[in-house]
Amino acid sequence: MSLYNISPKITELAREVESSLKDVFSHIDKNSEFCTLKVMSAFHDFRVSESCFSGTTGYGYNDLGRDTLDKIYARVFGAESALVRIGFVNGTHAIASALFAVCRPGSTLLSVTGAPYDTLQRTIGIAGDGYGSLKFYGTDYSQVDLLPNGDPDIDGIKKAASDSRVASVIIQRSRGYSLRRALSISDIEKIIKTIREVNASAFILVDNCYGEFTETREPTEVGADLIAGSLIKNPGGGLAPTGGYIAGKAELVERAATRMTTAGIGGECGSTLGANRLLYQGFFMAPHTVAQALKTAAFCAGMMEKLGFKTSPSSDETQRDIIQMIEFGSADKLLKFCAGIQHGSPVDSYVTPVPWAMPGYDDEVVMAAGTFIQGASIELSCDGPIRPPFIGYMQGGLTYESGKLGVMLAADEILGTK
Image (cartoon, rainbow, N blue to C red; front, side, top):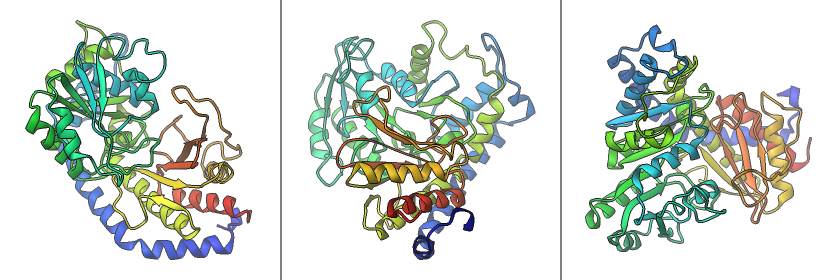
């Protein structure tokens, strides 16, 4: 600690916060152990061996490792089938492929968690020029906002989902760049049951980004038809170099594969270029790595509350995703916090992040991300749009120890003690 000359005030606050989080950390460890058992069981059942790590080139036919990993994801997530590919450039790409699998021209896509985050709004066609979006291809859109307290509007969902034009529903598990809380699996289960009561034929897709392994169940285990997410977030365990996944009903997964590639090809092609080993090892590490990120988030909440900032979730709330929201109230404090996170990172610690026009977003975004994998949200990072009330969204932490250090440096930046 002396290397960073962290102030005595921050050091003492850190001790107090850690002491208060013993029960929270114990709960996180138990969840990690359960999820690790799920992963290990799947590895054993599908006989993972060295031959799974070889990978392919060119068309990627007969890739044992790729096809076996699909089966492992499906088993762990309680799904019929899965598509795990380095060809997905990000989570939005995977979710978009899943959306095109469940939507059709002339029908309506219903969002039951309010407006999706910025990049998905362009995918749907409710922002941007609309070219290539769902709207461009004839799918309409409607939404049900969350209640003021952040809970799903069950009555509103029941009414909206009963419309015969609604053929697909999207549930956003995490908060994105919004003030709402992340949904629990129990929340998602309740939403799905409500939709099924009035519209049994609608396909239900869950944007699962940031939520994998934060609880013992996944949305596909409580009735979701499809889930999708990014490998450089939770399920990649900090090792996957790129990619995304889709899991759920076999027919819909194959439709999504057709969207990812083309009709007649689907998921049969797609070389892995030597990445299989990292995808396997990352998924094996994922429950533990997610636990490290959750501990880092809880510690951050406790520290920032001590300094008088509003957080969500609070330090004594159960975390449902790896994102920790801090309301700074000014651009200056948001930028200072992000600078501290950057300076506490293992990569590019010497640079200071500045706001920039990020593709897919309407406002300038500041992003602190000294990561081994570019843009990896499972690694310690913090970002946020430069707009009131100047919210910072911190996520990740490959190890709790390094995450804790980053938070302490960020707190010191705000206090101006460095």
